[in-house]
Image 1 (cartoon, rainbow, N blue to C red):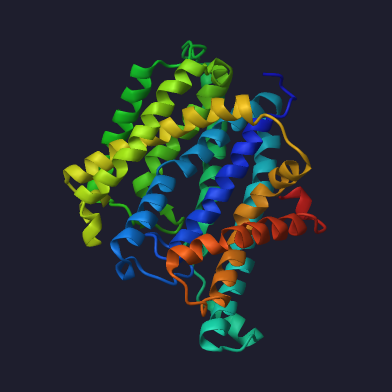
Image 2 (image 1 turned 180 degrees about the vertical axis):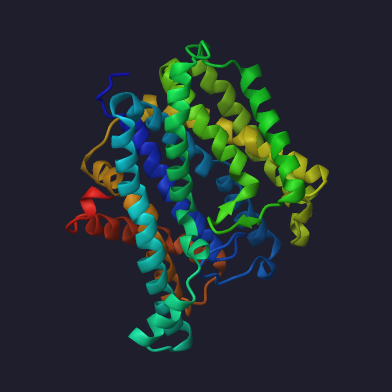
Length: 381
């Protein structure tokens, strides 16, 4: 692909993934499993249909969307390292990743906590109240969803010396052939098995502080960042063929259909899927394997589809692309405050989730678009 040509289909995938992140957190607000700042419903409150819908939606998102982000990050990190010096890259990474981390931890998170105390407990919006919050700040907990940004910063720092080492001692491997089905499925099975072993000791829900890292998913993130780098050097995005896409699309659809079966066999209808979350259980092994196959399937299905069908942008799509990073950072206060302020609306959680999709997405992208235009913000966001 031309070095300076913007990959519009990748931009459109980033928009899609950003939207899914927002909807994922919206679903958690109304009862899907997962940690979030404000939960209006708990999993145990739902009937079987509502529970199944929210759990399957959240679990399918979790299986691939952050891994896809790391794949894209690895792909573009490799390209940037070929065009710029390590010092330039480190400087840019600390500006673009480090500053938002500090901004979120020490400004957004404390302000959000203060506002939530006001909304739910009528605590005054005062400087004294803010000082109390600052005295209790926990860097890891305050990171929230910025764990992705800090992990990406760590990967970027580690990749630079690794790349220099490979240039000095090349492995002489040929990456210019797209891996066949057997290799990709074997890779997914290998990562899935290793994930299962990790989750025997660190089940889903375990978080490593002070970086707020979800250890049960960490191996996938590391491997997909590396695969993204490999994809760049092997020019894999140009090697994806319709026949390849057809197989993975059908496999992905089959995996989607099988997920409800796995959910039921794991005790989902009873409201307890603990065996699938970790430990030495066949359900955990099955879910770990399903997760990695589904992740690869979604990546290999979406990339050629967007390249063929969605490789163009109008003014709106360009604006959404430009605001995507800011949306990832600022959607937390927008979504939390919007749902908290409308908590008195007594609708069924599924109805409420569907009803708020468009308003929440609109507010998140609009606020991010305005924020990134503030003086100084354009250099960071």
